[in-house]
Length: 336
Picture 1 (cartoon, rainbow, N blue to C red):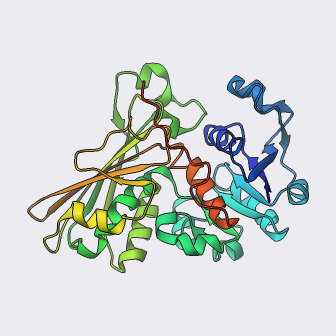
Picture 2: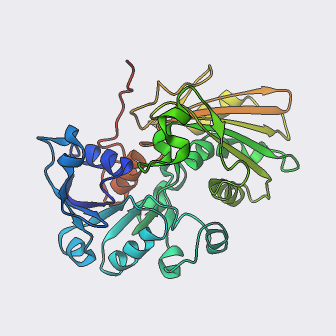
């Protein structure tokens, strides 16, 4: 049996990555592409898709999506996503939302983003980290796909939560390729600005800090000070996260990671520092950790467009539709 799917917000980078995966998926048929305006063929926007996909991006019509699709991927900005998700869910379509609209508790969402217009469905949304919430995702109608920074951070940090001393801050130094800033050009993403450069942006105050803090506290049942500092670096794709915390007891960090993630096919525990090239183009998350006394250092690497967005969305959709989770997830890194 095949399931019909839609990608809404198809013209962006994460939309493109979704399309590339879904075109090779044995159980999903990509039948609908949606956008804010519509009228342009996807292979005219992305010539790499010529001969592979000639669907026209349509102005999003939720009733048409409901009549033609079993599941929809929303690669839309926050606020726009819930405006589409709400009617789709009411019409019986399963939704994987790649925006922030359903990731946070209401109070945190409205403090860091905007007023929420779909509180009913927000209360039923499942946070889409398969390694943590696999059983809940399999039963979900709505999955909130995590952001790239929280994905890389939480997969690395959650195993250590029982051993982290909450009296000290958790410091997260994160670096992302320019594709993480989205398709729209901004002063900080112009070639002249980013080439041969690196800089922090929105340190401490970045919106992803509350997503990381909320999930760590829910998992650890403790209150943590989380200091999150993102940086933009001059590469197209990839993310490297370094985490520093204080331990409350002595542990062997590699042994702990290998034990917790022993059966996870897309978590690779490294015994040397991780790097971006080894994961770029894949669904893998590579993790390394070491201790200096009670100081814990953890490093993780992911592809921000894939494990941090599109391939994770497909993994969640696989679970939601009763398909083997690993189906069609990319494994081969882009190494020149």
